[in-house]
Structure formats: C-alpha cells, structure tokens
Length: 260
Image 1 (cartoon, rainbow, N blue to C red):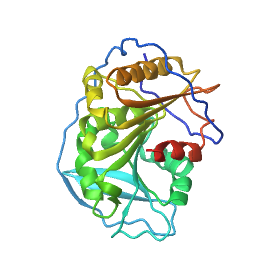
Image 2 (image 1 turned 90 degrees about the vertical axis):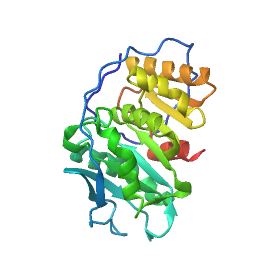
Image 3 (image 1 turned 60 degrees about the vertical axis):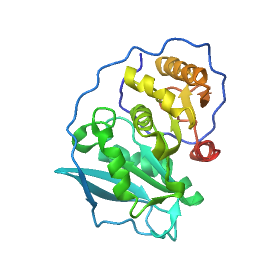
C-alpha cells in the first residue's frame, strides 16, 4: 500500500484524464501517531507585503508555534474576502519544503488569479495526519481575521503526505471547505475511510501518476468508494508520471480547482 514519503517539486506541462477502475477494497489502514493539542492564540504580527510573493507568519497554539507560508495577490485588502487555498505540503511538511512548494507550485498562478494561499508547517515535526490536524480549525479561525475566505469556506489541496492530510482534515471538518484536491492522496485509516461519507457534497479531484502503482491503486479505490456513495469525484491518471507529478502545470491545476 502507499506510504508516507519524501517529496520533491512539480514542474510544468499537462495531464491526461483517465477513467477509474472497478470497485475494490480500500487499503489496509495503518496506525497514526498521537499528538498533544493546545488552544491557538492570536496570530503573530508579521504580515505579507502586497509586493512580496509570499511571507512566513506564525500562530501560537498554547506553547506550540504553527508557522505557515502565505501568498497574497497584488493590492491585497485584508477587509475583503478572497478565494483562499489551504495547501497542505508534502514530505515532512517542514518549513523549507513548504516554502519551496509554495514558491514553485502555488504562488505565481494564485497571484494571477487573485487568490490567497496559506500553507502550514507541521508543528514540531508532527504531520497533519499524525495529530497536528486537530489544530487546523482553530488555525483557520485565527488566520481568517486577516485572510477572509470567500463564502466562509476554503479550497483544500494537498500533495502526497499533504494529500493524506487533506483527506483527514476534510473528513473531520467538511463544513470548512468548498472542495478537495489531492496530488495524490487517499484516506489512510479506517476512520478516514468512514469519513468519506461526509465528503459526498464536496467536489473531490485526485491526480496521480500512472507509474505510481500503489498510489494509483489507492486513488482508484477511493474513487470507487466515493462513487458508491454518490459523491462528486474526478480521477486524473497522468500518463508517464510517477509519484512526483512533473507533468502537471500550475495553470491546469488551478483550472481543475477553480471549476466548481
């Protein structure tokens, strides 16, 4: 079955749409690590400059700091709502990789389209499917003081481990999100699988490389499960691609996210 792995960066090109396979059982669940949860306190004073690609800010959760990268469009007005993308990073979800993925995948296209992007760093190295996901609702409540999501809900996306995180977060808090997009991702535990029933009103899009065999299997199983629940799911299998989707451009990705 798929496993949590390290990750490098996407590069531009295109994707190919493929049909999903027959329904098969979901992957065997794996255990997740526990993490302590604290109450989030007000957002730090560091703010993204209008002329910057992105800036690093932080929210304090009890004694735990959650750092995050944020990108705002030109002329950003904190008094106005924007489409806000919550982008869950891949790999160890550390500060360096989060910043790299923000710069190379999300920022340019988001600024073109007038979107805000927020991408959190795993606090203390606790991934967002190993306990840190518990902090996400309060994290969003605090950051929404400055980055107001259009319609009161966020667009959620995740890459690899971030895709696993995104399924966990969406399943626990479906009311917070317009849609879910993973590149790739799947529900990693039996509880996450059971939570798929909470996503049936939410558009779900899955991108996966055809050569990424175990993740393709999980993507097809997840698609079949959502279809069986009459969910709104689209599976995109990218020809010639492995786990790192080097052939998926940011413009095509944002088109898929935006078509809701």
